Length: 207
Image 1 (tube, helix red, strand yellow):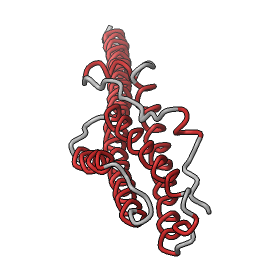
Image 2 (tube, helix red, strand yellow):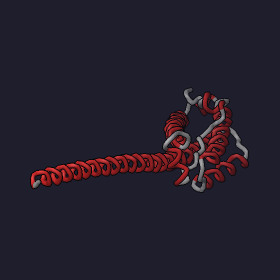
Image 3 (cartoon, helix red, strand yellow):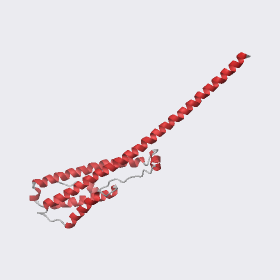
Image 4 (cartoon, one colour):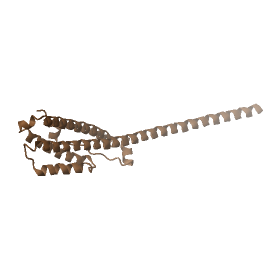
């Protein structure tokens, strides 16, 4: 009789013990899943922030490069003004553009300014090319090389910026990152777009 009671208690204790381990296993699995989900959530959120900061930094670098382009336009006009006359309106536009660069917030507006300044640069180079004596001057050649370096710099920064925007915008579309984008209002960003002619045709500065 006593042995029977001991056996029943042992069986009951064993069942309870095993049930407790099952509960702990389930609870541990749930906690592990939650930690994995939380880790994924934090990783995606941080990636959004990293890309956004990278885009802001890239835009700032392009602004600096565009200021250099506008400075080069001014220097080129100053160097060539003894040979050719440039419209006062052109220099007024260049000065106005330079003052606007720092105030620009988005890629769309910066694209417009970039296209406008590039057209002015191309027009001035075309005028300068009509004067062989001017083209042969050492300081003009050095200035042209500097202009080419600036154009290469703008091209590199634009390429890097648009790659960042492509990844950022893709994340706003695909699962599960699009859910996090929706919660934290990570909206799509604009690409830095130049006219097709501006992308395919770089200024010819090698004389």
